[in-house]
Length: 383
Length: 216
Image (cartoon, rainbow over all chains, first blue to last red; front, side, top):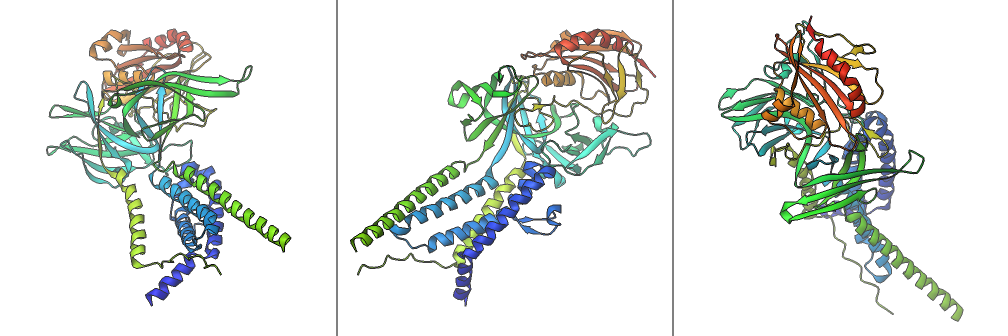
């Protein structure tokens, strides 16, 4: 009984019909994802359509559920694997084997990228030294112990944790943050006369009104993530504070001689090395404003490797360093600010391996078919 | 007659393989949960390695310029509003959002004059001045450096502390800021920011505005 069931599943998995249906679904997903980028932005659309198992509640699909890219990719991978195993293991089929294995590696690469790739950016001005990268969209509430004159102890509470609400213990400190309200996106304004008082009882938030807004994901929009938090330490409450990306003013409180600042900001990842921007060049074609090249000359200082060297990062010539790839991505402030796109993808080599395997497989298959054809012609001549 | 090539053993989908596949899926899903922990970093003070100005928006593709860093701290509802007289050619635009007022200047170039009001000390003068300095990539000051950088101006509302900073970049950014605390407990920030040349042209007018400050 079980064997019969497994056999049916196996038959379904290796079927060519499944391949056709999955490829058709993939084509639809690519079309929907491309159209959705107008409203949702690149990352928003890719997450909603390509990196989800089921696409839910999308206007383009009349809000009906649709298999997402992750599910289609997973099934396609299983289908390919089943198909590969099903091909006879012989020299005549070795090319096809290589092609199929190459495709499986390609899908695995995309799966690893979808699950593990981290996209951040490094923004640095000429003369500045920066030792962190930051997210494009994700936020953090940084609770920073600024007491030490040399070092800052940074405790980063991710927005996803704040969104759950409740009490958040800050390990290594006596502080517990009670998250009273979280807004993924909000608009801050003057507290109008007669308006309800703010939830905040400390800091600048006491004079600010806050209105929840729908979450945005378009490339040129940013959520004004905000929250009301109450730090409690040693059984004492330090009041309720409004923390928001839209708040520029510094806010801090002191507990037992330690001063802690609260800052909602784009999520940072500190690096064990630092980049100093020595020069940014924005070259144009003579007599025009048409860009010819953008380049950043950076000094990479890594004390753990006892390393200090200059690197030129320019268009299509990224720096691969310590598992991250730094691309020249944008610029600003009258050509004194450089923005490097930073990609960390443990599976970055897989697409290259896949290309080599598929190319090799096609060449082998072509050689085998050519040999067979020539032999047939020779036999015909002789016969 | 040659033997046919050996066909590969064709495994069926057993409970063991299903469990392995499920386990792999759960492993990858589990990776997504690692971003929900409180992380701790010990980093050098930002004054030692000046903070990168966070772009107000994600970086645009090459060929498009990024905006200046956003600087719109929120105002409370001011009880006794600050008033000022504008020099010839200057006009006042509605504040909107978190900004109390914006001035339009008669000078060409990249230039902006804004008024922001916050309740209480709003984090303190040193922290705010260092925040402004960070925005034009200047290192932070200590209390002694702050006192050295400060000039004062008398107005009807009291002493206005004035700061004038220019960046070290190739294209210099400049910031002239007036900082005044009013008796109702609010702190007012009047800032003139932009490229160094237009700011230099507009500074005399801006100082006139600071000198004209009075309460409603």
